[in-house]
Image (cartoon, rainbow, N blue to C red; front, side, top):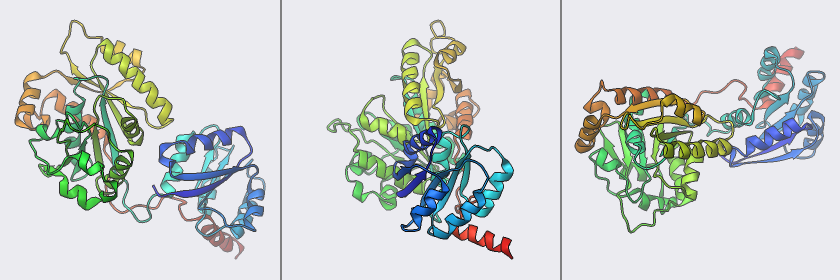
Length: 403
């Protein structure tokens, strides 16, 4: 998302809290907003003598005098200014009238949360004329040995036909990553070397060093090297995700079972987080901690998805799935049964589960999960209703009304 400036004219605690929550959202990390008391009249006075920013967020009390106020605001705002209104009325006809006049969005205070406002602003400041950004899915295990890496590799393979011709798999387990083995591929250069020099990271570099699995998955492998410290530079990770989002519709991160600053950054940068856990006490405890942390840090965005791995491997000692879900407070999005022969053959052959056993229960569960996570079709960016900046569209509408 491109950097942008915003001004907010709000009076109520509810509106101030909504703004604070939205601009704490990772999606608006590059946005800078200045809060000020008041509403449309105060905004009009301010922009009589100063230039309006790219984004205005204004709280309104109701529709009395609203349209006259918008007309006055349009006279003093720059043509590129977008306006988001916060108001008390949940009225679809009011919403339609406002967006027809050029208001970018109207959110009902008390009903819309910070994530909804962040989503609206993100849509406004996506790269002009660009394609929809790719979706990043981060896969992490609640503990070691639960099958998170295998899930990540197979999910990247399953996401390709679900969303677009090819997905990108990034193995970030720098010391012990296995994506290259599971895909039976050799990469020219490990991901650590690429991450170490963020200034060089672009589409051409990633394309040159990515190995391709069956024309469906591009792989940036770890090329395990125990001489490395295992740290991922934050700037390098941010840059590689930005380039990946611009060029691949689906990006899957295979994250190691660690708890470091860079890994937390990867979890917050992802659009979706998949936590794999086995049905035992240690995995339940760790999954609860992960879900709680993600819920606190990711706000109102989509919660993490639970995948149960190796189900049935220890039937006598497993926690019942219903009890596990109840204790965690989350339903399993997929359950992967223990199929040692199929999983072992896939690992030894360097192939995916769907190729070894296309009718198997694990392959079916991963396909269903991929359908749930599938990104939107790639193509030209579609303009959203009301995306035309306020002054230009409002003045056009008001001129039509005066004729």
